[in-house]
Amino acid sequence: MKNLIVDHLSIRFGAANPVRDVCFQLDAGRSLGVVGESGSGKSLTALALMGLLPDQARVSGELSWGGRSLQAMSERERRAVRGREIAMIFQDPMTCLNPSFTVGYQIDEVLKLRLGIRSRVERRKRGLEILSDVGIPAPETRWDAYPHQLSGGMSQRVAIAQALASEPELLIADEPTTALDVTVQMQILELLFSLKKKRGMSLLFVTHDLSVAGRLCDEILVMYAGQSLELASANAILKFPQHPYTQALLAARPHLGGGASERLKTIPGSVPRANEQIRGCVFAARCEKKFDRCEREAPVFSSASQFNRCFLSKNERGSL
Ligand SMILES: Nc1ncnc2c1ncn2[C@@H]1O[C@H](COP(=O)(O)OP(=O)(O)O)[C@@H](O)[C@H]1O
Ligand SMILES: [Mg+2]
Image (cartoon, rainbow, N blue to C red; front, side, top):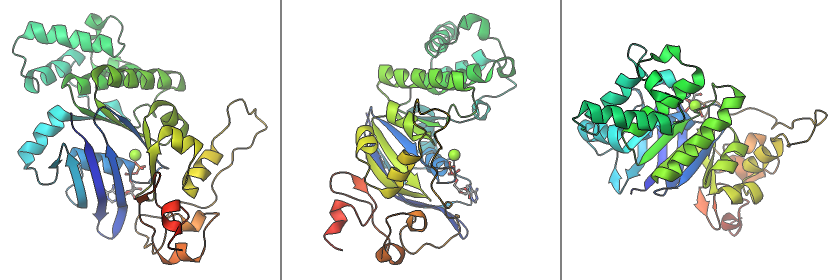
């Protein structure tokens, strides 16, 4: 089982720097929720781990998987890791599924090419088991169906089945339910987390919903403007958030049972653009607790009790 370490990841496209400094660790068998507003660099971070960034992207920092540098690998080694050890599912299941082939064919290919199972009968048996694991009723009747004959929820289940067929050690799920009906969303997420537990794999779960991540994940990474701002156990993030941005996100959550009269609090201002030069803290412009130093100097991502990037945190206070 392998640990994943991302250290000072930065991704540039020309003058734009949408991922500025992302650091986190995901231990084998754990689940990490990556939370941030749209445009905070979550998907780019996930694609960097898969080695699927567009060619123009300039990447720096260290991506380490089981002690090996992902960047130092040859394209061939990288492809082997991508096919067998790290798999990814996307918001739109059709990113992974080919509309021209049947469900069965797409699962069969993975079992044949990635796992090297020679017997067609054995592959069909295994494939049907996986489809049943992801909650597809009467899988034999779906084996010969084409993706467009399935609902959005069923297609996403097939995409999950395809990702799981290669028995990955790490699954990256990038907003896997955002495009689905609210009623199906929670079912699919619960399924995903129960499969994670059953298979002992690690899960990197990308979402813009802090409450959902808090409910399902072991740890949470809060991202903003291409930086990791806070990393801690889900419980610590929800109960003892240290970064003013995490605190603001929590305050902006709608309260369950709050009733229609309760106004949703939002964080005033907007996320800095990817091509904006930022000298100090990336959140300073919207932070209620900022002081002079925050606009002059960039705080580092450091840990006393939990990883946090703020001059107000305990580990930085001594140097004020
Ligand atoms: N191919 C690209 N070229 C230039 N900029 C890009 C490219 N892809 C993404 N970006 C920029 O990176 C920002 C962050 O993207 P993304 O990782 O998709 O954010 P998130 O998944 O958190 O919503 C986008 O808002 C966009 O400005
Ligand atoms: Mg995204």
